[in-house]
Length: 415
Image 1 (tube, rainbow, N blue to C red):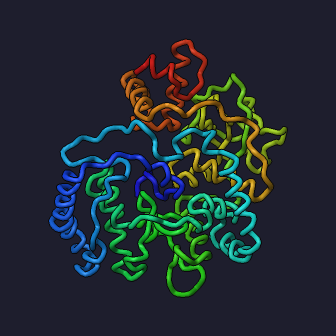
Image 2 (cartoon, rainbow, N blue to C red; image 1 turned 90 degrees about the horizontal axis):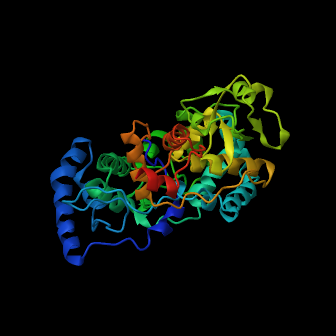
Image 3 (cartoon, helix red, strand yellow; image 1 turned 135 degrees about the horizontal axis):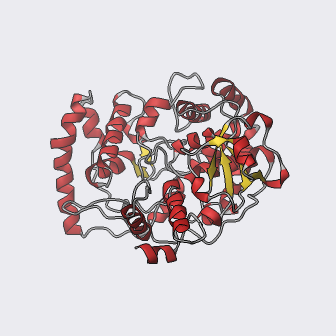
C-alpha cells in the first residue's frame, strides 16, 4: 500500500455533502462503461488471482459507480486539483484540534482503559505499543467502534478503481477486498467501509487487513468489526510492521528560537536531541528532555510553520504517520495518547489563522516553487513538510521572515 491513506477517519464523510454529481443521462452511460470494465478488464485479473466467479458476481451484484465520491475523473476528462480539501487532516490545524474533538477521544479512551486493561497490557507486552496509543487511534478512527460505515466497500473501491485519480492504488485494494471474501475472512454483506474503502473499527484498507489483522481473542478468526482484542492488537501489529520503537514516545512540544530556521523541519533532517537542545530548542514548561532521549535522533516538526506549536518528534511519530499520511493526524494521535495517560492538557502553543486557502491555490504555489527549483514533494495542494520548508527557504532568500506556511500573499506573489 502506498503512503496514500492507509486508513481513513470516518469523520470525513460529512465533508462530502454537496459534491456535484453527473446528470442522469451521463450517469447511465458511466454505469454501462463500468459494467463493461468489470467484465472485460477486472474479472480476468481477479480470476487469475484465484477469485471465483461466484465471489466476483456476489461482490458486484447491483453495484453502480458512486459519483458523489471525491477525487473522481469522469471518462474522457483529465484529472484536476480540486478547489476544496475534503480530507480533514489537510485542512485548518486549529479546527482539527478543536477541544471538543480531542476530548471525545481522550475521555472515551480513559473510559475504556480500565475495561480493557488486561487486553492492553497483553498487547503491549507482545508488541511494545502503549495502550494509550491504541486507544487514541481506535477513538479517532471510528469513535471506539460507534461510527457506522455507510458505504459498500465494493461500490467505493470499484468506483475509485474505475475512475479515480489513483486507479492503480484502488485496483489493488479492490482485488484485496475480493480476496478477503474469497478466503472466507468476511462475507460480502459485512464489507462496509468509509468513503475511501477502509474497513472495520481500525479502518484498515483491504491490503492492510490481509497483512496486519490478527486474531488476538483466540476464537480462530480475525474480526476487526466486532472483537475489541482483535481491533487493538491489529493496530499494534500494524505499527510494529512500520517500525514502532519499543520504549520511546512520539515526541515533545518545544519552543524554537528565531535563530533556528523552520526550514530545518522534516524526517530527513534528523539530529540528536542533544544537538537540538544545543541550538536553543527547549521543552515547554521548563521540563528537560529525558536523559535516555538525548543521544537518540529527533526531528523538528512545525505543522503550521511559525503559526503554530512546534515539536521534536521521534521516529515513532513517523510510524504513526504511516497509519494516515498527515502530520496533523500523527500529532493528534500522539497528543491524544498523552492526554489519555496524563490528563487533559492542551498544547502550550496556539494555532494561528492558517489552513483556509483553497487546495487549488496551494497547488499553484507549489508548482511555482518547483519552477524555481524547490522540492515541494508533490504539487497536490497539500502543504506537507517539503512544501513548508521550501516556503521558508524561498522567504529567507527573498528577504522575508520565514513562516514556512502558505498564505494568500505568497500565493499572489508566486502564482
